[in-house]
Length: 256
Image 1 (spheres, rainbow, N blue to C red):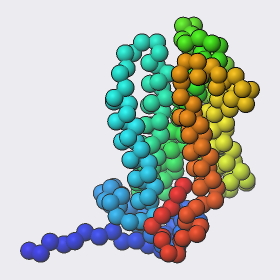
Image 2 (spheres, rainbow, N blue to C red):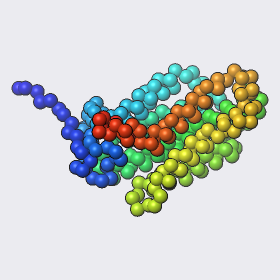
Image 3 (cartoon, rainbow, N blue to C red):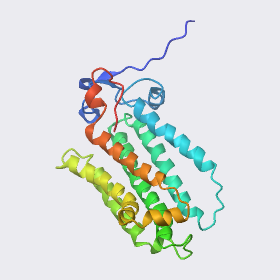
Image 4 (cartoon, rainbow, N blue to C red):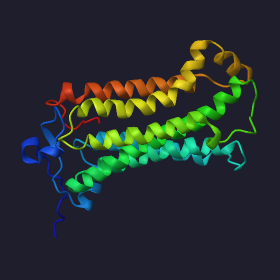
């Protein structure tokens, strides 16, 4: 018996429900609703979510590998690092699964993106915990503040509350009847970013951060690159690049 070659049918935007369409993309959509087996198979083919899935899933694998090689001793200093590590890896994993499974059906699509937004907010809290512990100690001129904890930090409390607000705003943008959806979407992503980086930027602009970091031989480049990549990602998201420029010549790319 001749084996049958399994293929994934791709559809044009006019052939799928309006809520599943992406701006500037006319072709490369998976079927709606899509069975679970087809969703899994689709990540190994070229469609409008292939690039999204692998650019999230590969960083997840890299982050897990790096986390597994960190010598955790589960003492006081390990907890901020654990919070940051799990928030990073969790964000990449949840986002990759959301891009893979978002075409199961209309309800499941909303559930996927709600979890994706929650992972972004969880990431902002994890970053704030690491920044508050590391930078605050160095700014004070000490290596470890034994009295530090997440419940006594007003900064972390503020970030957590703002993350819930950002999560709510991001979720309501899934509703087509909400006015100023795009504005709320930008604010919902901008709030976690601002509180995640403002600690570093505030003291950097004051000029006393670099001196304290160099005193304890802390590398500044990871903080800078973290902010640079966040800004680049925001530009790609707002500009809808590259799908806005190559939607006809390369329909297999879609960045969200």
